[in-house]
Length: 130
Picture 1: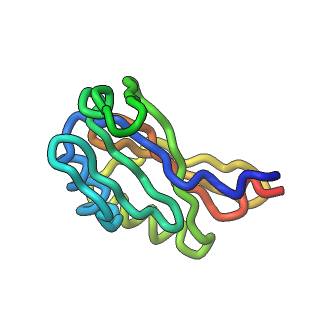
Picture 2: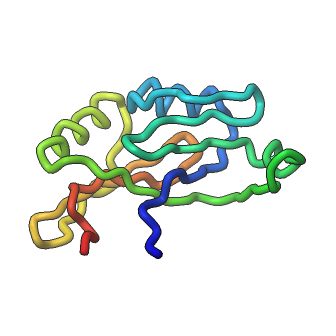
């Protein structure tokens, strides 16, 4: 019994509008769900990125409550041929790239931050594969 993949991941944010402006407006992620003052969900390839207001999800009674604080990290995988265009897309959106890293074996990644200072990374397809 193997896990196939992580289907969704969650970030806790301070402003849904700022998150929507960043993930949808700048990165182009499709909005697939939204509840005012609670959450906004985005399609990120075959995965889903959930952005919750921590205090709202902490008070949940329908599903188990959850919340968190601090600067989290997640990485988005792109095809090798799309790595350069994604780096340009991020730069052209006015988002500073903090660092680019060479992982060896021909794999590169770069890091940048969202409005809540979560550390985001774009990695070339194939990293960490078995």
